[in-house]
Image (cartoon, rainbow, N blue to C red; front, side):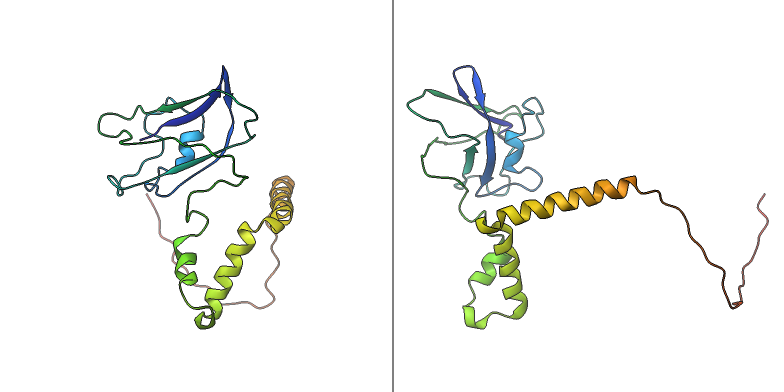
Length: 184
């Protein structure tokens, strides 16, 4: 288990904005390796269910490193014996953001639809593709941000609204039967 992954330039820890992986154990996503909780031995990126197979984690820095710099990569593994990284390697790139693990942007259900010929897709499958596209397309990023802000504002507003019970008299008498029992 990789409990924490950090990148340092001299004494400064660089902020990691995003982490994705080609495989994640249920409940142990790679984002736990960048949550800055290095001392929690039970939290981190794990791959149980895929052990012994090639698995990769991709980490994207918040700000690009400019010029020639010496970086230190710290991989903290404190879960215990037999739960450490096996044969691993580190690579760096200068490609533009976003940096994502292969197939991470496509959930399994979306990948399944993409494998169907376009002219054979059902209306539900097309809707699933459209929904996914709207959730990741860069041209909708500003709109997604506005929607998130509006939803947050709505929740905050609802917290300020006083709630009370409102009842109105019944115009017709409906039969009502109940049994009262004495409790001792």
